[in-house]
Picture 1 (cartoon, rainbow, N blue to C red):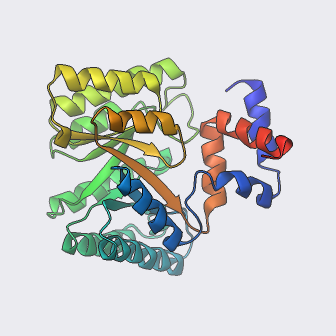
Picture 2 (picture 1 turned 120 degrees about the vertical axis):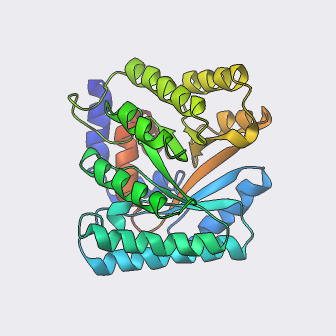
Length: 300
């Protein structure tokens, strides 16, 4: 990240929330489930699948985790009631991972039970590096107990990810592969764009070779092109993978992937905790933060 981008991200964090919100809501469905459902219906009409995520993480009290579990249950019920082509994404620190791992496991298992009754799926998102091992441990436990309707996320910027994938492919894991959204030290993470891109493609090929179902989560034209090449060379079927993107990001690329005949899923976040999510995304992609500044000064 260059100095100008660093300055922009720094400034964004001190702007009034009402100003940040005006722009952030381009990338977040709303604060309410009903609005997120409307967004999902619109995406489904465009032949696009979806993932709903109730924003929030790093809770400190069990009561907060229980509320998050209830919110996740409401999402699954609403998906079923509205006949949506969508699933649920969760962050384990919102469900009590840092409070009590057994308590967190119980909350996640209850969501999987509801999802299973609806023939639906839950994606366990990956968070920052201190939680990686515990996240994978909980995922592996769920799979060992017979839960097939659950997936996990691997971040290509992490140096450990190749080893993690070696473990996951033995159980034919359903993996969402992304670059990584957290600022991590160089000792444990690749920092340059090229390093991350090359590692992403290496991990993607490993997953394809192992015949794992992959969510190819990227907005990077280079990685989309590389994935296209693998898909063609390996003669993969549409049911073997899907592309994944964030709500409100690179609409033209999104529509092109769909037009090219690939399955695509949009990650649609919503909820009261939109601010922390937005700031993290600005840090991950300072170009978005530039848009915020430009919009504020232009009156857009």
